[in-house]
Image (tube, rainbow, N blue to C red; front, side, top):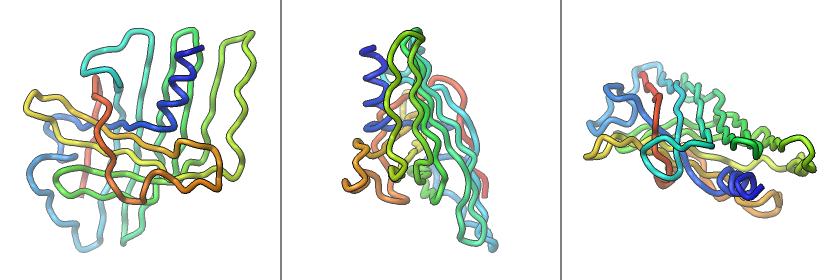
Length: 189
């Protein structure tokens, strides 16, 4: 159960992301300007680890993003899921409202649609988030570092209290706190 509580804390306070080697997503070189239509898209999936760049037996933390900007309007969906063997899971669904890229990072932010917690049979269910809880969440994808490690930032409000302001600012990057183990993301303009 401690791992599940840690998952809830992770889901409500930390960061995640990744890029595929050789793609334009979060490359160190400046990205080309958007075309005349203002189109840009980010799509991908990654297995992440909060403890380091290698696999993490007993846990599965993933991020999936499908976001696009056309004529200055961003739409899409992102999902962050953290599963613990024999302990349960946390799944956060996000409606994307911003996609930005500047060569140093690619940022996706959006409003949380839902946070779903599951627990093993025989354990009491966790209470759902209030229906008014829709804070801004962010995924930030960074280029590979000098060691070839790809990092991701993931952040969401740390409380379900709707009176507390969100901890994420729309379109703002978050610090890298997760490592990409597998998968990646492709940015297209």
